[in-house]
Amino acid sequence: MPRVRLPAAVRDQWPRIGLALIGGALCPLAYAPFGWWPVAFLAPAVLVYLVADPDRGWALPAYAWGVGWFAAGGFWIYHSVMFYGGGLWAAIVFCLVLALLFGLIPLLAVGLWRLVRPRHEALALMAALPLAWVLVEWVRGWLFTGITWLQLGYTQTDTWLNGFAPVIGSLGISLLVATGAGALAWAARQPGQQRIVPVAAGVALVFVAGLALRQADWTTTAGEPLSAALLQGNIGQDVKWDPEYRAFIMDRYRRLTSEHWGADLVVWPETAVPMYQDRASAEYLAPLGDEAAFHGTDLLLGLPTFDESSRRAYNSVMALGDQVGFYHKRHLVPFGEYVPFRAYLGGLLDVFGAPMGDFSAGTSAGTLRAGGRVAAISICYEVIFPRLMATALPEATYLVNVSNDGWFGRTIGPHQHLQMARMRAMEFRRPLLRSTNTGITAAVDERGRIIERAPQFRPASLAATIQPRQGATPYLRWLNAPVVAVCAIGLIAFGALRWYPRARGR
Image (tube, rainbow, N blue to C red; front, side, top):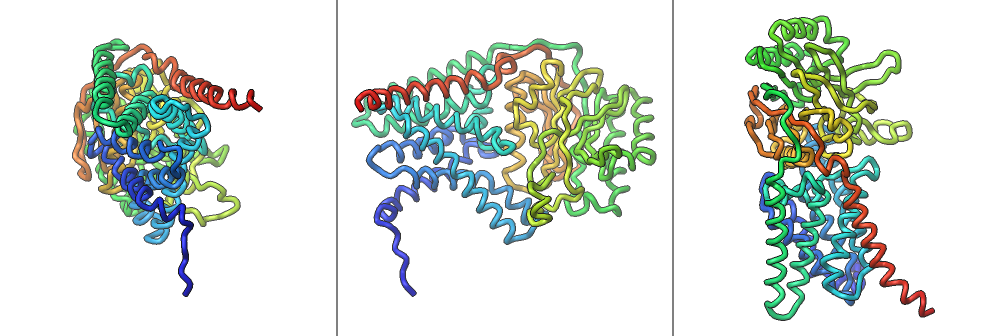
């Protein structure tokens, strides 16, 4: 059998490719549940260092770093597909394809940087490359439905840099982290130790600025505190939609609810009711609503709904109590809640085995009145999209996120999901109530700090008191526009400085 010989240029890069792959795979240690936030600076610094030399190959190391980053950071998807979708081989192929696709993100960022790279190395590594990185992060936040998972800014939820969240958001914090990583790589490329001191001083100054911003309130209290109970049914995915378990599931949630009659609000997780709302109404929901009204408690219930007129199904939250209302999930999960190109491919891409078939996307902003206040509702991973959350603000005085992270088992996925939800509380300075099927159920204050938290994989009813808040943070007013403008204008300026002299010389 003939031996396959790789080109010499590729063979010579194997050590650098291996180092890049390791650096990318270590980067997820900066996120929850590990929280080793300095890795968020060190791991990208490895990438910057490897691509900094203009005379060395850059594409393969950049791609390898990205593949390692998303393979390690998104491995929780393997659990979903393996146990609740297409099995072992489907999980391997699906996760491999995702890692190979998402590995293109750092490659695109470095490629964009190479087009506009300034001659001065300090500017190139500490300004131009971070701008290119964050601009690509912004694009991936909306392109092809978007995904903000593993955004660098999320690594700083528990550091002083979170003080920047209500001003420039997670994307802006990503820019600060990327700049710090570029500074570390630049210092490592300089002779001697004299460059380390100014870099360390600059990084420290940014952290101190974040600490100063943390002292600002940005929003004000709105009325009296709200008492809430967050339910965690801990219903296994293997029985959740089995009709034989329907009575058991509803009895569990009614029992957990009964422990908190008299609270202002009780929140059930995403699709806690394992049947369409119209079919559950007479037997389950109507008596539950009567009892809630008797005790003066409002309910927010996760359940599927079906519109007879349009013949469309929705993943919804129903407000039951003083007022009845519905919110239909607007940002659906591809392959989980609907299958792209189903008309052409049929069930070929049903890797998650969605039990209710395809959902349709809602269109109305996510506000419901519950507990006597207006709440900003999000379902599952909608909470990772700040622009979507912002449509309910500043009218809403607190945030509610319902989810079913039972798909992800004992992986890092639920921890990362909670971390991103906490960032929304920081950005908008609103408390957050989060109810999930198997965890992580938690109450979070307006600064993103966890007030109460239920243990994973146990039935639980978590009692918490939050203080609703009103007003608009700078980030709510601007969202990502200033950060994107800085990145775009900066890269255009660098490109002009690089290419205009060449054009004039022709």
